[in-house]
Length: 437
Image 1 (cartoon, rainbow, N blue to C red):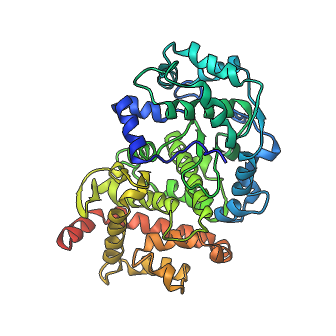
Image 2: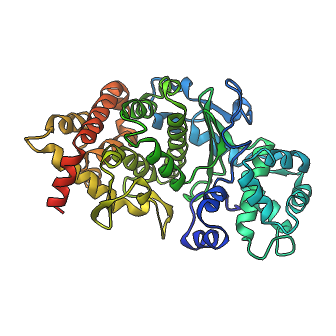
Image 3: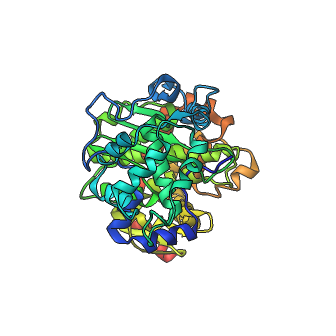
């Protein structure tokens, strides 16, 4: 089987990117899935890249079920439909159409894509002309394009692997590949190229209210999340957390439309990345200690309740000034949030210990513990007094889904109240951690 386009990068691949571009240009290039101009999106009620029923999942059809159940539903769920799409051929659109789509991307992105080729758009279009009208699936598209991209048409500074990945993705999306998951009429995303058991495969492209389609990296997400959750921007993050938790516990997307546009962008990117990582976690049977990247993503997001008002993060086991972007790193498993797990788990554990104290708010910690009964010692060993991680692991174990369904509102309220409290207590928490390193 041909290896799919990877979202997760190895350290060497990341260094290749760094050698090509830097600073804001790097961020622009990472967003190679961007469609249309920056700050624009498809009209309300329409979908930028429509898909048929076999490639469309409306989350509202799973209302009352947990997000994990929507992921794992036999035949109709996100995992099964994405796997089916990965092996299904499409006829590649004409080179003219693909180029026309690329020319609707953010200008920085199109400059980067065309800029990898010696003759820019002309060379890119020539590559697309070699595959137009042919039949490929996400499993085979990369191999179909690869023979036409080489040193003969790439600039010396360009990476052939990156050029092949970008070109294959764009050809596939323009040609109808990718499973569409709709949150509401203004917020949705596409899953493309996830290949079990390859946990580094796949990409998810998100469209949000007022924001064009892109494949947000962990760093992109952390940057926008940290900016949105600053106290000066968002004094009360409760509605944001409530909206995403309602989706995770009961596929209730009703709160999305009530959020301001920047919050919808952040929440949609969260759900797109969360879905990507959950799909990969399902590939390894949701073992809490193996590739729990969706849990990492959510924990860092929840910890912003403390980090945003305090301006502090845990880095190299010490509390230091910073934003959530500090939880992005490059390592052996790829670029992403999971590389800093020891730091943010330590922070969450210390926050749990602080709030569990008799002079603080043990009732809030106990409420979460009581709603997440876990007796399996192997699972308990993975949460170790970290009430946030306990909660997230509980949401992503199949045996607990009935309880999540029947207590969805309680679970949402319990976590939102806890997050609001650590927000209010941020100064005391900082003093406590600094006194108890």
